[in-house]
Length: 517
Image (cartoon, rainbow, N blue to C red; front, side):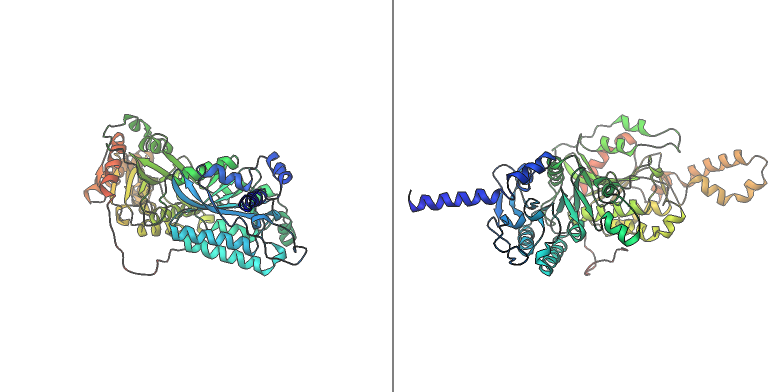
């Protein structure tokens, strides 16, 4: 064998050994639980043969506490760049079979290096978290490593999309890196994310709880709202990330991946007319409206399990990517509460940062009343919606389907918050408050003096609704672009998007606005 052949053989041997991570036995144990390895997660995500690894030969630099001479392949994290549906993306994937995936100094450096490259190269950053936390043996250096990762999360924020995947343990300070990312995907089984575990909570507060209550995918997705998507398994999680990227630009200076169909469908959809309940108090399923307006099968809902009284997600209308925000009357009557306001505002700000037009469907009776909401800061949280829409400079199209009352009407991107076009169905009611409530205030004396208050109330309510809450009243004041039949919604929205895509808006120079956090 020649020297050249020996060197090549040695290279291949080293590569294979390092790629084994913690060894076949550990991988098999995890495989029995339905978990993929750190490399397999990247393999199913990136286009075949496109992944270029960074730092394959990196080893830890700790020589104390029994670490001297101990091999830790890749220092417990796989990093690199590849292609997803032909588009570049950067990623790191922690390897729990190597020292529990714990983060040390060089482990952190590998993550920071790939994050720096993602920022410089203008490509999305994907982080697959599966780690026991900070490497205790490296003490303050591991804490420093986390700080450097957090700092880069903030540098990348608003410049390139950041998507985190929770595919195993993610506890304590380690949870703050994914929390600083734009979207989180968490596997239903084999994953947990929390700051303090059940034992710590019991020791500190005396309260007993389970991991399911505080750290599971269900708890993070539906109660705390930390997680945006719940996946059935690792492979499903990576598919969700791929689907999400299909709606996003690689960075904040490029447009979303619009795929215009070339022809705008101007046909009416009469089924939309049938969605409106005969009874004004009846609830309407806003999912039905969304699914009839977007291209077939092209709606990816975000944060589905959290604050279900508002719907957010990405869709396409004749190939144009849009961010959709919609009240859901079937949950809490579609009112805006603390959680819905946070959910909506965060999504709006993401879309604005990455040049994604906003399409809003309105059916909102107001902000949710109640002592808990007032004491919890509904004023501060609700103001986030007003701020987010007002600050957004992307195309903003609003469709008012039914109720639009008071401050919540404004908070759902009214013309006053510089919506580019606002359309209303004939069933829309735009007023300071609902007709029933207004009549009780305005005609209190008359109602108290009449022999038949019910009949008078019904008469006055109908008159108020026709005279003051009609969409034609708002249209006469220039607050509505047009009143349209529900059946026309898709074609009207498509035309509006096409006509506003070239929108350019400048704002007064400043470092940044101060959203009421």
